[in-house]
Image (cartoon, rainbow over all chains, first blue to last red; front, top):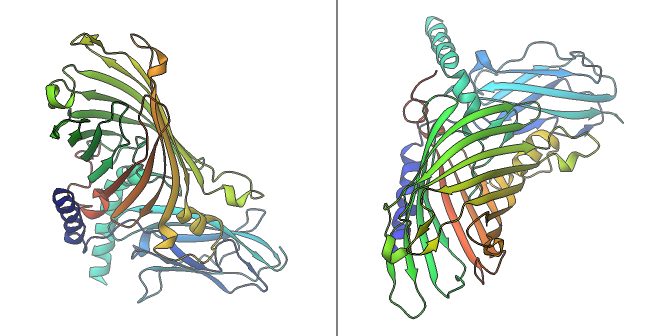
Length: 122
Length: 304
């Protein structure tokens, strides 16, 4: 039993030893929330990630059901918020919209994802 | 401004260099993250390490109790080619006899990433594992006195491409192994060494996928990082022994996947009488070396 505990502790020390490292950036949450319905059109989509992002290589786009871009093309990591990604939206009529993001964390690990949200009754 | 440009240029260079390797690392196919499963071999090359894997096995058919402490290492040589190492320390308590302990046979492996499809969340790998003769305690623990070659095909498929009308099935993923064991010696001490057909599957429901890509139901870390799963694996003799000697287990459990490591725990339920009786359990601490050491041992040796 003592040997097993030592091995788990050795493993934990390995983890702590690398705390300053960065890792893959996963989507933590979003506004509008993933899969949500909102009563009125939001002015922007904001994504929060589990790691800081490399701004030059992190983008988010929003499309309608016809596949047309409805974002303002100004995707950016806001100053002072390195784990956020934001894009402005055109006025959105009721419908279902797809958010597609592709980011690179500061240690160069790329991740990507998509989700939808609805405006009005959808 | 100059420092920002310099930093961006450095990042661009690093990203260009690592684009292939990072995209394949860590069990990703598109937005699908496949965790490292305990029983089923992973369908991706990786820079990862399990230390330790502690297994309390079900009681063997002859009444023996066995506990194992294992270590696994996976290392990418190139973005698509990797090697693996496995060994474990075994504590064996034969019924009515003193406990014996020692190393089991050393296993090495070579793996090649056949395909990764992001849009279909599909991933496939072929591999060859060698279990080496006389690298464990042969007489006391029953470690093999013969080398076995085991070709495998490992695959994974996420259901994220299901239609939007089935949203809560999209977090499901399946990984699986199909393979054979070919011992290089047909018998040892009068006991036949059969060729085996091995097959196993892991059925996973990914809370991280549910939260990031389907519907935010309000789970936050650490709950949003849980992946309930059921693993099954069987090994059936295809010659020299009757098929009734099939061994296999069913292992329901849970994986918590963090940024740098994951922890998995599963119950072990024997699926055949030849496997044993009663319940066992396994716990594993598993490290993502590509995240812990992204600029050194967490990278492929060569980008080609």
